[in-house]
Image (cartoon, rainbow, N blue to C red; front, top):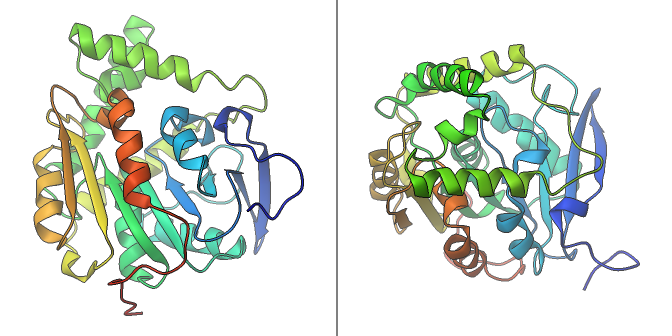
Length: 297
């Protein structure tokens, strides 16, 4: 049951943008779905703002769960300095979650957001009940540091062809991938009012350096992740090699792995009709208890 008066918003395109202040930093966030129980926090990708979440992923979750998405520090409508490391970004996510009054959350994450999610759960294992990692890899994963060159190259290609870089970065360039890219971008444009500010070039550069350093760091001990974990990717991810999703699966005991065929980095968006119900099923109801999840903090 919702704790607020009036109808419950379950459309991400209509969710109002709110702000919360944390020690002088203003975080912009959107929330939707029925209040109560464990909320689902969405951690977004490189260069992304609040307007970059696919509503076909968020809306099905929000029909039964309280959903929260937010701009990282220094990105979009959030103030402050952009996190210079993935670890720092994880601490920023933690302070935002606590500022909103939550001490237990499920996390759905994509790409850089899923790198942040790994550091978040390792630093604050009591906080996370269930974990979803998509289009990502582990700290120190082979070739993650090459995402910088791949990103700049695809930004150049997009500029020359007057396209969105995500068309190249997230999707294959065959007919199926091109169609999926256009459909995805159309869904992102469904929100017509109160749209977010795009990321600045300096913020993008800071995030890219954080990812490069993450890729060149010593591996984390992922055996410490005991939360139920769902991992998903496409079989041809150019940004974060698909083999790293299998690596995560091997290293996180009891995790589930979904690999979508003939798909790239944005496979969960290309296959949203299959992924969204799998996600809803994996997250389950909003009750606070989840047997088998331990706290080690």
